[in-house]
Image 1: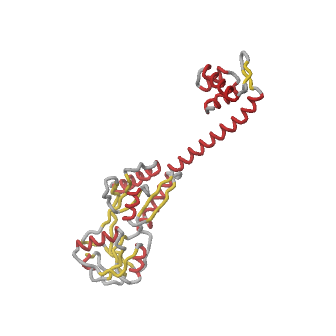
Image 2: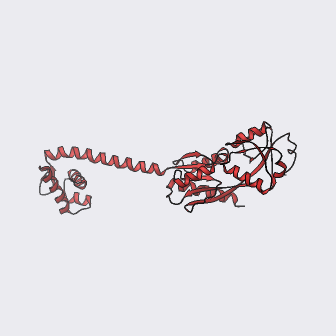
Image 3: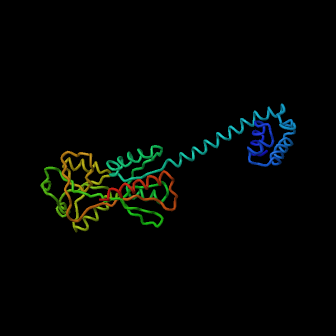
Length: 296
């Protein structure tokens, strides 16, 4: 018994005319007749009483139609549910991002994206840039906002913008009145910084190396807000981004004149893994957003 036979039978039972039913099923009259005949042979009963101009269901045909209607209805429901599940999967993607990014720019980006694509759901993951790149390589996340440039051939990384880093000092610190400083000015100060596996820490290390000076690290953390809070408590100084909208009382953010301390931020993905339509929409949205920001 084939699905097409059941569909032909259902149409024939409703129309009651072989030629009209064949036209509706987009098959020839003979093909429809053969399909019904095979079905009757398999069941061992007559489903239709054939007349010159029409055909009507036998008692067995009426009984069989009841079950066919239920079976085909269940199949159509299952098909619709499976298609909807597939559609929902396409409307969800995973986005990873580094720690400081989540407290200011990301919420704004997500709000703008959701306003344009309210049907798309995003599963967020916050990690260090190094762990994020490992997730991208393993295919555990679809897109990533990170500052670590890809080293693997199958990992794409597109530059978005540069995040400036500042020297954060207590407001009553001797350097607080300066318009700018160099990293050499911070060399004798106790430094509060990120843990070694964070990209921000790696960049700070590179900047101090360029300045040919060696800071005295007293604390290593995993959150920029914690570093700022410790600076406000006068436990030391730090090199961090000035995060808009988050006030740390008692902190002065000083521009660094040498070396220039900026962190490149980009969006990364695994080119060996096809992006879902939802992930592709977000990728293009973010790239276009920062293209517009750069346009004078």
